[in-house]
Length: 154
Image (tube, helix red, strand yellow):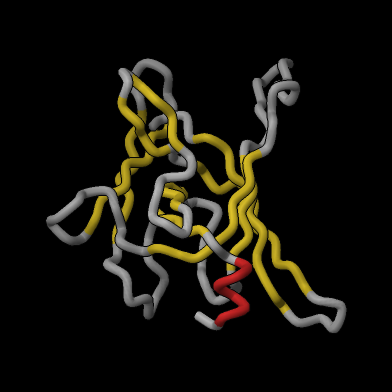
């Protein structure tokens, strides 16, 4: 990473999902199941290596900012909730809409997005719901922008 990029992307995040072709990370895969009672589709991420099932060992440098969604819930025929955070990252890092983001850490390695359940800190898992490229005034692709929402299954 160059000096300027390290100033811009001060956080790291783990990407849960299938590693792209040619990636140096350990690849993973997802098992898709359906809840028999609700019919909900459930994705369970698995690792291709034996240690730490569910963590793909693919970390990216990024910047993540939380968004206040206290008034963003909408009720109608379907329930929807707005974006909980947005993330910017280098265009060389590949993140897809089906991926999940977790273990967001600051520059000192401390977890940045956690919730406390039973007095224990647990990292929050986010679903990627949108990815857009961002361009500079000269048309060069300088970063990617992703909108994240808290995953329903932690």
